Image (tube, rainbow, N blue to C red; front, side):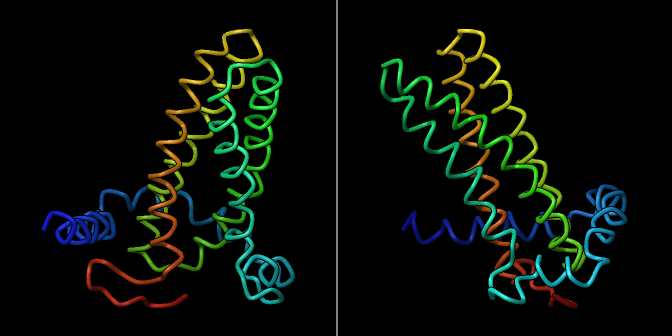
Length: 183
């Protein structure tokens, strides 16, 4: 019985985000830059995945997510090699987050207003996760591995939230009952 009610809660949450006009100022602020990313036909074609059939952002998310989740896994082991490897993976995830974010913003520019609102929250969760992983890397590089591990676990929670929202964005369906205007 509880499991059956969960999808309804998530649908309501997503619908509330889609309808949150309080996010419109952030949408309006981000639109010019995101639109510029898609202004060149070759870049637009690459980002949309015209050749591969898969949007570039969908492919690139495996970089930071894979690196950061691998670091969280290696943090379960308390040997020097695992510590060094997890610190490197955290750094790799931070570097990989940059092109992933740019491709995400470009893809976002083609969404309608309700999905752009969800995208703003998705981007905020990603930015927060990236900041937490930067802090994790800094703690680790300064010899405070325990703090780095705790920060990485907090970052992983943010990644779960972001991934949930990103999945909704990539589906292109609306939870609030509104129809997509385009892309």
